[in-house]
Length: 271
Image 1 (spheres, rainbow, N blue to C red):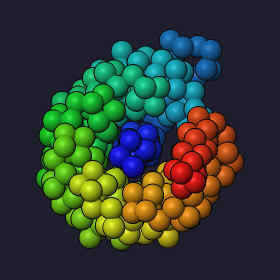
Image 2: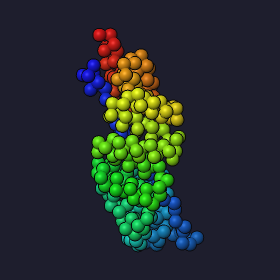
Image 3: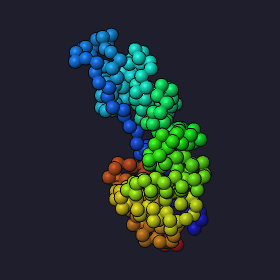
Image 4: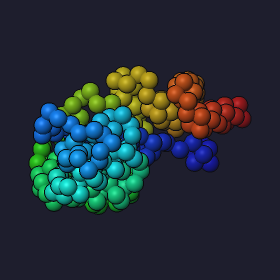
């Protein structure tokens, strides 16, 4: 049984880390009604370039957005929002170091920039710099004690450092602020699994699925948890549902891993 358990791991936090929200700052107003031709780059103001960068962010043109925010910052190097949004674009592209640099500049200019701390903390999480992430989420909570995302994210950082009790405390605070955030229950379930509290984990995955009925990772983890609790038939049913959802989402690797887990459990049940 223990050998099989090692081959059927619980999905970790990294599987949904990118679900932590990243917020694009609102557009600045144009300085005038007369916007120069887009091809005439030298006539564009910093605000024009900023607004065009925001439009490109919303269109998914992250490289183009970075270029526009960079040009805007040449004209106005102390615009916190341009630094912030360029950092956001880098973060979406997976360049966490450049994202951190952008958010750090935004914070230098605007020391209470809550969203910059939130996103920099998220970038540190993805960069596996967990202590730095915790420091940023601490600052977010100082600025806004009702920021449930900061408690969830700080809990994730504590979890990655192996401080599971601190993680549980943060998840509980996030739940007390919003009982309808399925992601918090999912993450708390993972922490309960790490503590071998599988009944508690099962309850959390079930609650996550009540809120988000098509959340494939929660079906997967609930299936593995049921397997650990020796409920083989229900474990297979949950894993089959996870596989179905992964297939619908086009996540081939996740689908195949889930099918492999089902086959392993069936072989164990038949032995």
